[in-house]
Length: 104
Image (cartoon, rainbow, N blue to C red; front, side):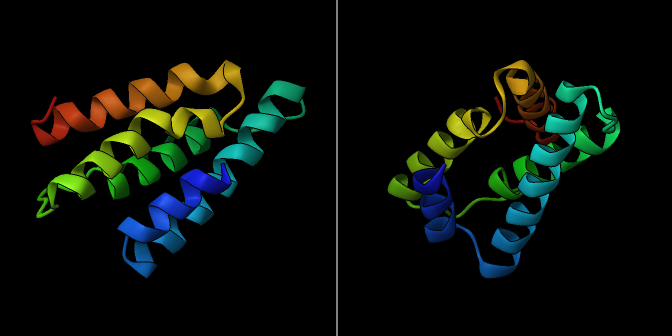
């Protein structure tokens, strides 16, 4: 998780990184609450993950090949920041975002 965040910090502008941190914190809290049966909101969890993915997958990219590789790794490994139960949700949010943006 620390390595993932450091890679994201190196790639994303400060404002987007702040949004990623806040959205990840919300997503993790919601996931823990849902898993513990103490509430939590599926829609809030999904929206938080969508915010993270949208920061990682910009509509237009001017990345160098190295930056593109880092971005792809962040997207692929982002699910590891969540409890196992919620990792499929990360994948589906990534797929939806890529489809909306016309990528694959």
